[in-house]
Length: 214
Image 1 (cartoon, helix red, strand yellow):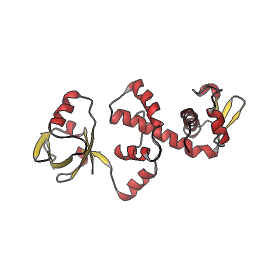
Image 2 (spheres, helix red, strand yellow):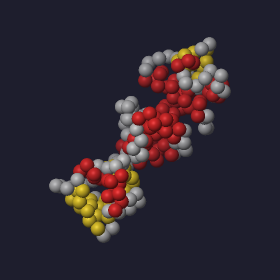
Image 3 (spheres, one colour):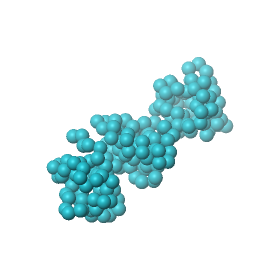
Image 4 (cartoon, helix red, strand yellow):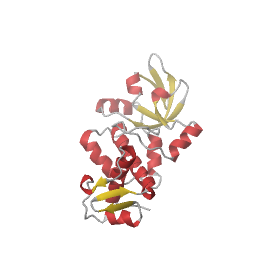
């Protein structure tokens, strides 16, 4: 089942209001989707919401889908900040656009890449998914900063979390590129790693911006 973007926005607003803020309904004027939008009929036909006069109620049948919608939005926010280094109002707008694409297992892949984050950039909890539960059971840490590895451990470079062009060019010149294998040789007093047949030394700040899939 794929809901329209507007239907997801309604569910998201209702779930946050009812499950996190303790409200029992929202006035239509509190929801950014106009009252005449067909998305309300879409959700009503699925028994996800109930509309009485100008009030919109979240039914129990819609809670799970609302939770998934909030999860996708907050994962999108983390992706904007942690990977793409997009911040502020622009990040929120992009997250709203991107969340609607995180379906059919894409959200689980993004969550794993981000190492199953517990909160969004605003400190609000990200509802856990099955991938989070599986990671806890298996002890699989997913994607972690290079600083989380021990000397002698290796992994595949997943992404670089830096918005500094100088740092990015420096790392790329070392061969630190997504998909390449990296071996951590030493952690103190500096981080020494090997990519291919070359070894390099960097400080802890730069090492934290290299994310590795173990």
